Image 1 (tube, helix red, strand yellow):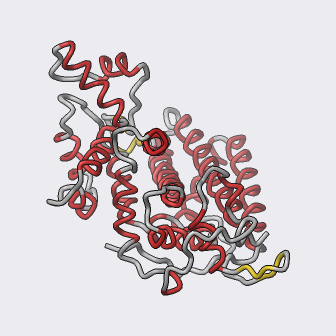
Image 2: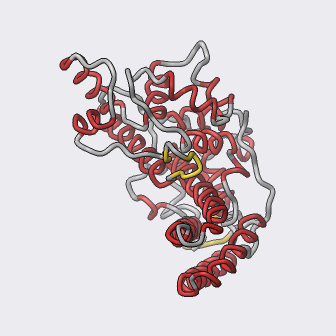
Length: 360
């Protein structure tokens, strides 16, 4: 299943049609129940609009221009992005890319503020609960979009990822950065389905086999293609390890610590309290077990970030364990089904000069 490509042209909308309608209804409701909260959120939305306007007047990343005597266009940008090592962080990214990333983070903070306000008011204004749950879903989708963007960036800095795959990842990033309203359901609905399902299950730990977590994903309508990828006959040990990390929200190293402690202490089934003591940190919940709609997408984001950092560290340290997250293994497979941007691999590992096609 290849990545879906959006043909949507960038515009001045802050939100898509469904988000705009929801935000408008929620602001009207809040203005009647808590005018002060509505005023704060209206101010934040105005600031989002200012940022979106700045993005809209920034030239397209596909536009050709000359800087320092060098012509820069989409081809040179792809070549630059394919060759980055990630150590410079956002300093290696084009100006419009950093603007888009700032806009997405700001949009997430705006939606988090909206959820915080409506959740706090639900006990005294229960009519806000449906709006609060819908806002939480929109927040989750924006966070999944950011996770996918960071996943694509992570592939660019992996030394063991083929140049052709990196070039496809770079092309997808350019499409995202050129349209601030683009969301994950428009370019990678398969990962959105996996994250949405994972965000709605509780982890029981138990014997650390993952069977119950797997079937909970199925019950939450996780895309069969995602599950089938990790159940295929030729799945590698590293892919299995990464999928186990995904199921439990724990790193390979943390799972190793728990298994060693289980063996040493003769424990057959793991409780969260016991596991938290062994790991030295509280195990987070992605959702309230009493209500799968009460999801915490920020907790899922932290879980992904922890697994991604651990995978990067293993490459640097040459240590055991998967060198990629489960999502990265799947995304590479999806990207490799796509035609190569430009029709050839000429992007290679060229540096693209000082900052590549920055379009600053």
